[in-house]
Image (cartoon, rainbow, N blue to C red):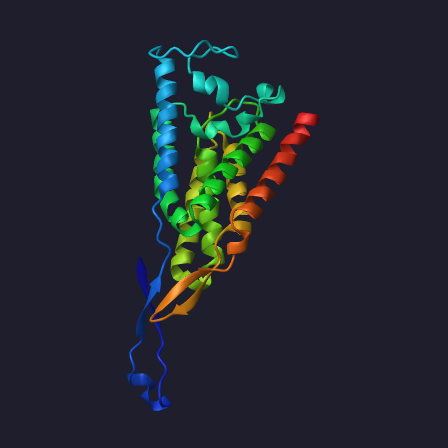
Length: 267
């Protein structure tokens, strides 16, 4: 996929500058299908189908031993602080696959579909998957630390994608120019509106905040940092941060938020 940017041509003499039109040079952009986005959408939809079928009694997966609910996936996966304290640590990440109703999952999956493909195209498949998971984890940890209420939902990871978009646009302003600035303004407005909505009862704003922080940290360390390089008749976007892809940001987020969770578990 290519896009065209204006570049100034060289002139043979200063007096000819006013008569020369800018030359338009094609730029080769990363072109990847959003495979991870589609897989996450499919898995989340499948888990929600299991939630629905067990809730209404059409699928019998046994009884929930922890609290009164027939929703078996939520029974074993949602964030419940006493159960995490008892050693069920997977509840810090499993809630990204769980939802409380049709409107809840529809909103989160629409946000994933709107934000995810562009990030996956720029980050790559493995890096995007790591971003989504560590954002969900950091959001789960922040909720565990700051809220006693049970919670579930992919909004922790979605807020991580918002943070990733903002950092990516900021760090690549030199390449994308005014488009990057517009993206940053839009992301900040969306995040602010959603945090205000999150002040309503029943919404886990701490989880949102943690997911946002996880996405910011991951992208600052492992997100693409592009520069333009000539390739024949075209310009190509080259990621100068390729060596830090995936592992550095993933380890940093896991260490920071894992240590915070361990502090509460061991207290």
